[in-house]
Length: 370
Picture (cartoon, helix red, strand yellow):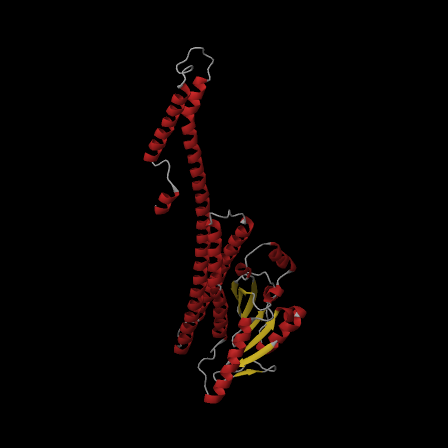
């Protein structure tokens, strides 16, 4: 478990740190470290922060399938936030989830929508995080904090340091949500490929299972964003209730936290709206595909109907002359055959002219012009 002490001017990585009058500490641990000995880890957190984590929250912190949610107690607040699994974090998934991902033929862009939970405990002057190993967001945040430390050593002050555990948590949440925003372009490109495949008249589309899995993944992203937004909304309401604004400094801190919370929620709303647009676009492409198939079937049936209409009078004529009568007009006439063939040809030409005038038949050139 890594321990950072953050104050107004510096960031110190100190394994012997404890809560100081000024600043706060950040305790960072992985799921494997907590699962190794949960009781020992909880006792160490209690020693450093003076706050005991409840049993149910301890189980929630190591539950890799837990959805995003917020809960508050008299001693601390807990936020569980599901983030994208990047840089080897997908190894934290259960064996069943990994086998399911392998069986389903999901495109590469949608395979990136695998998520893992990150738990945050806000304990007064301490922030405790429990996350997957090799977390790019946490590693980048640690690097930035240490860079702020070096900058502060040069000028004696760094205004970019987080001023509270809530501020640091919201910065981490904002970075996690931005990972979803980075997927907008590959997801859009993948959906464009689906649309072209659905509407390509030269190749009939038959990869329906992959398309169904893609729609399910987009629906999961939709539900995931709604859970994230609900958790952040509860956190925002808690910030409003916890800060009465009687002190000017407290009111300023409350405004800063609300601004950051609203910014994170706005980013989540952008991801949610994008997921819904993609889902609606895919649904529209499927509907257009079936409409195109119905239109093509209608054209085929129209062609067959015209052919049937052309041959119907000809069949009638051949049926009449096929009757077993000894005396029939043109039956024993030398030119009877050619007169009958000419009449049949005139009937066909007349029907074609009528069908063309009624736009029952259209050539390919006229279709392209239309």
